[in-house]
Image (cartoon, rainbow, N blue to C red):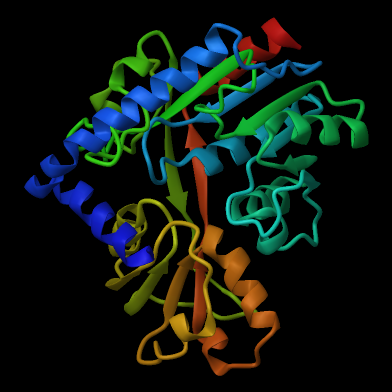
Length: 334
């Protein structure tokens, strides 16, 4: 299954012609999606309304768009302003679908990799669950003073009422062949962007009008997975990733002067020792998102490979227009 995912992902990136064979499946996907949305819009299925404002930050594409670093940056900003913010997420990759709080010692198996990263970065109150309404109820029960909730993804989760929607678009990656799944990597048609608050993830601000809502990721020096006081100078490395759009990670390393041997796995890949143990010729560099899983793997193993693994931290840099927009949300809803 993971190999098929990688094959299709590569085909999307290359806009392979054989994807046209999947057009009937994309048409079926659209009919099912439209029917699902219509049921909530007409009230045939119930929609959960939270007792406090909810902001959904999501995307209309499959794969990484920079959503999680954006959420981390916004949470930190709101905390600095004194806003009592909480976060919810589906918690992809969990072993259990029951709603759960994300604690400092939670593991990716318990709550998912991205929630672990968000909480370790911000210490924000957070809950996960397939049912977003139940996750919100659990979060508010344990943190009754919350004023505002950010939903990590959930743009297509129509069972959740949202007061604010932000859609993150990867300006460099674009929309490929602009087709819906599985012919392309769109979850929803491009018309979904009409009238929406769109945050463009792109390090090329000169290509956008002034005061555009922009973000980009800035890497810092690689840090060792285990141990301290070690420096990884630019050299040939294995770039190991289990993220939705690994090409951005590979390019970042290349821009930093590293020679990159690409080792992509599927999004949210559950790493095992076998994935890493044979990569001994060069240092291994992983993303911060993958690090939360690999670090857990290292705790259960004394294998020497973990002494040769490095994490590439990144931080979202937001334009002033994004912060201004967030200020308007706070003024209007809190």
